[in-house]
Length: 337
Image 1 (cartoon, rainbow, N blue to C red):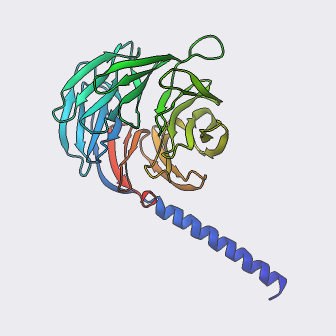
Image 2 (image 1 turned 90 degrees about the vertical axis):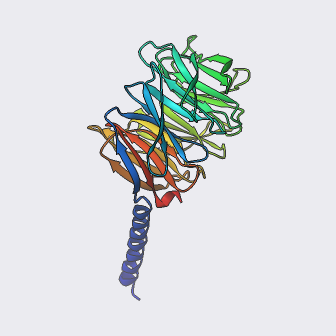
Image 3 (image 1 turned 90 degrees about the horizontal axis):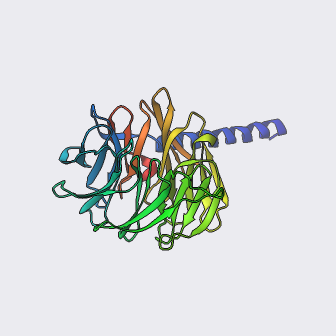
């Protein structure tokens, strides 16, 4: 084989391997819609029960939110109360209760506890002004950490009696406090992470002390990997999802988005093998982009509506997500199996 023939041979091999990888990634990102429904009052936050059989949904405008059967989207029951524009929902570990963050526009009664079996509200508490927008359950199920739309503190509550354990002012280096964008408990329960316009902080949830500070542009959404090694942060201004080491705060990897990236929300799959970002791509359209923690792009799925919220099923390779316009979709993807 002469040199020219040899070079052509290896070029064809490279092209073949690249095409094979592209087709495999495209196949892995193929979406199978299990069910989908639309409501005139847009669905906002979506959360799976830990058993995986129930979806809790928030609504944007009215006082009624829903529990749906996750297998087919049928209504199980509604939970309803005054001032119940629901921004975020989390189930307790036994799936007997949900904690919801509600409200906007100067609201002060913004943290609710509901009984799942009959949709009865058991507690309504004052938490953050202008509504709660982040609620994270500790891994032992004993506590929730919350932040508010304009709140400048992280509050931690014991569940299900909803007694406040600590309120942590989000102090910055300028002698003031900053609005908290998102909060998340670490998988070992020893840390609560928060984000604001100056970066990310790791807090001791028992004493309120700062454990680690990461300088980065504003992160609207943060998520710990299930093994606790990484914290992912969606930085809208950088069109990127960044992975930081939880041991020292160093930047491990930067995952880029090639289109408009506004109002992003991110999550790790239960296995930790997949990281997904849902976002707005402009003109009310949206997308779901999937990566491995090593940075490999696993897939991109464009959607007609901006992604508002998303949640992985505890098992089975399913993903539920809501879109601007009122859609709730339950889908499966080969890459999640």
